Length: 492
Image (cartoon, rainbow, N blue to C red; front, top):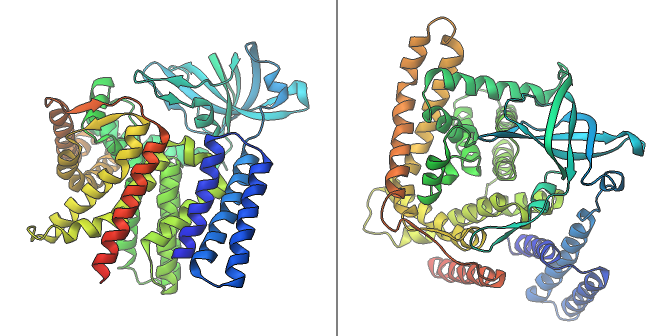
């Protein structure tokens, strides 16, 4: 465990340092020299502290190197066409992000003037233009580079790096898009997107708005259809994680899958493989965000442990999943707020929740003790990062989450039933579909009631002014020291 912590902490530290500060190879070479010093100390006087120090610093250097390799320049052929009206041909690579008045479509395009050099652009088009994943399209618009911007509290959001984490290097603004060729029948991405929209249409057929949109949000994430006011209610009440695709959604589906596999008569390996496939399909349908991938990786590790009869340790699984994801895409760490919040919340549930449970002797009900401990642990763990990113301090987040979170798995299950009922019965017995969807309506109405009620309370939230990055790190160091201290006490 200590060695794994040193590896992941070192690798993440190296990536974070290179993401925040711009430096070259001399700094990396200096870190290698520090590694050599610790290695020599461990060789001449073997001690665990020296060995862990050597491992930590060598992975700091590796993390810096990985971040340097990811910092690629803009494709020159496209950069030469900035602020010009351009036309490209390409393939839609992700399900369009539908906003109130526009759609944002990621398209992998080629530049005919540069021997087919390719890049990914984000095309901003009117909402009326409908395209699907894997379709061949022609796009027209003004080519721009994404720019960082500041919010009302002075916090800078690095929009360029945020898009780059998904491979997007340019924006095609004031754009238009036309379909040249439909997606081929063998396109897995198109098939998964079709399933997603079929399910969302089923919800639309059986539930009114905004309950249909919330039902889609609690299952596969998404805020389209909620409206600005209701979306702000979820943010003010600290319940916004319910309506975005987070690791929590995937975790619930993974638990359902593993619970179902426990009743099958298949061999462990076959049932675990089927479970992994089911989770993979769900993540593909919902959208492979960083938070969903992190939860899926942890679920895969749990299924592997189940198939091989090995013990599953959630802390080790989280560290290993984070290491793999940062190795694949180091931009997740500093430029994907959802990834950081998901990791912090999961770490809090794993390491803080047991400590909090020990200090709740007045609660005799095991279920509510677990709910209170996990909710408080998750809220405490994400608070420094949330305040650094947004400044939004919700004073009602803990009570609102205590009320709503036990309802979320039920709302997901009932909403799934409502969607399937809409798919099956809408064409010939629509009333039956609406009847079957009524429990989902009640569950989602309850969640909306709590979100609106909590956000309407006086002083429900505050926006704190921006504060330095080091202050957030200091807060997490303090939380880590508290966790280590109480963990040692509980093991004595």
